[in-house]
Amino acid sequence: MLLTVCTIMPQHVVCQGCGHILYDGAELKPPDEIINEHGGKCPKCDRKLLLIPTDVDVRPASK
Ligand SMILES: [Zn+2]
Image 1: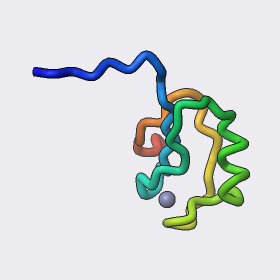
Image 2: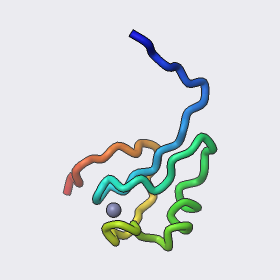
Image 3: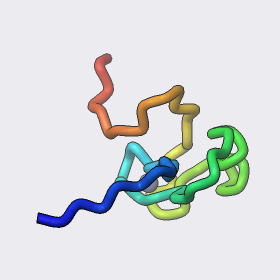
Image 4: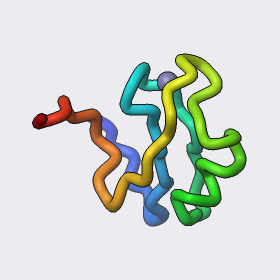
């Protein structure tokens, strides 16, 4: 088994609505900057983008 170990941590920002990758890169960017680049909404599902603090994993809304 061959595992590739990356020393850099790519940042993944994924739309919580549809899973569309909004940003994928090695350079860490502030989430609000990424959101601004997309005009504040997902280009795919048109869902309004919210700031996601640290974890970008998709989670169902709790309320
Ligand atoms: Zn989306």
